[in-house]
Length: 219
Image (tube, rainbow, N blue to C red; front, side, top):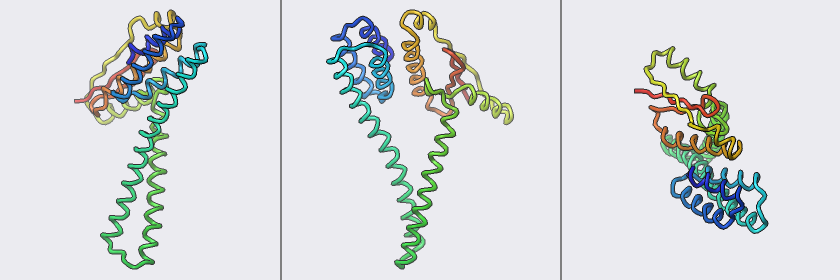
């Protein structure tokens, strides 16, 4: 994915639109296979915004963006639908187990269950908002604020862990040569890779600052 992203930026910068279209097709195809649709979307948005593209290429980009938006929408909708279905099924099971057969009791129970579902959904989004404050917006990894919190918790509860510091080599050269937008794409790509590889609870990825990242590794 990072290789295709860099190649797309270079083709766009050089005005090589035929190779750019081919590279975009390969990037999106690979993103679909690896579930990196958001990474591909960010790349297309950056190129479309930062480079002066001819009308036919603009039209090509818009079609690809619309396709990516639709796929991501379907993914997010499925997650939300699964959550709602789970809550509804739990409510129905409780009603059956309690044998609320009478129509009035049943109606009241459904209302209570619906209210519980609403509370669960609100609690879910409240948790997401809280979690978002601990997420680095550019890379999607945890931020330094959450790193400091985790370190304090580990020290308080005597939780053993190891620390791994990562730094992107020659990152200044990327910014100086291709611009800070290309540098942002590199950071986003690193963040996507770390998030994908650190899905286990035993490893947590944080953006320490700039092009530096930190991993907390537990036993």
